[in-house]
Length: 125
Image (cartoon, rainbow, N blue to C red; front, top):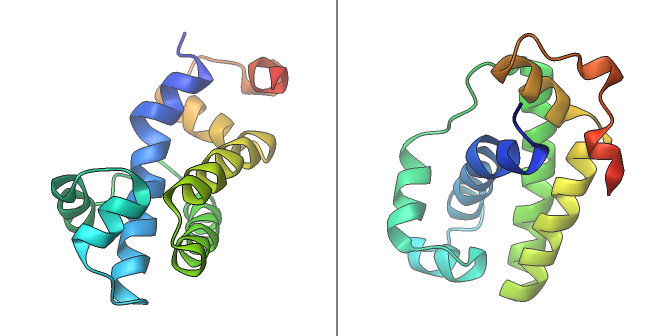
């Protein structure tokens, strides 16, 4: 069984970062280098996020919700220009995603046999 933190690290965080990166570049005209600094990742990672979003297997509603979270994160990153505050906002968003049970949907797609209705692993936070 995959743990929620594994799902976040392997699948959710890359999708969320890709959405944030694209918004910072397209809406705010930030450079890849500046986006990398704000998000605490490499410029090469930013380039990879620009080229592809890995959100396969999620319902459009879940992707819409993730897009909304990403918009909030991008707006926070642009407004604060502080990598520490951006990291904190990302962590808070991951907690919200667990609470809103979006992570459960992704978990169900990755492990079809899991009973997400009766799972309480995300409730431990």
